[in-house]
Amino acid sequence: MRSSTLSLLLLLSVGVLGACGTTGGALFDDGRGSYVQENALSGKDSVHVVEGRIYRGMPIDHALAALGPPASQDTTTADGETRIEYTYRSRPNAFDPGNVPRAYIYAVDQTVTDWTNLNRIPRFDAYYEGGM
Image (cartoon, rainbow, N blue to C red; front, side, top):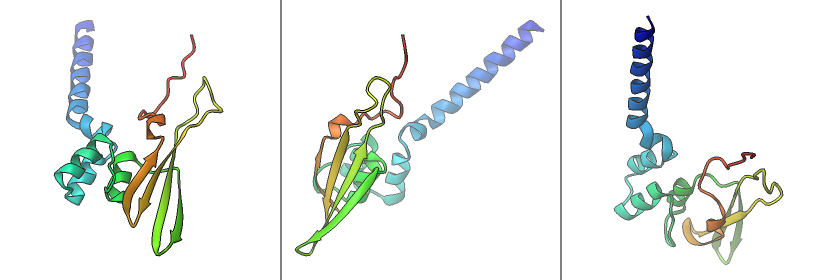
């Protein structure tokens, strides 16, 4: 009976690992791959979106797909141009909860024009908050 239990556990673990292997890309790209397929992006935009990177001149919808939804946005219009500032915030961590870095993406007429502090926002879904 003990051997059959071990065999069953081994079979289940192989099945779980197999399922993770077939869907792992979709789980870890936060829907970026499906966004590329659904919107028939160019080669350059496809690579940038899947890798979570942006460039100046990129359509803002593609940039938002690459980076994920912003925490907030601010729209201003001057001289007939609509400028949008998208704000990204990192989550507080246990080591320094008061320090929440911000990054900004700037777009004019639906095109990325510039950004600041993107290197300060970690690309991870969770921070290491462990204790010793």
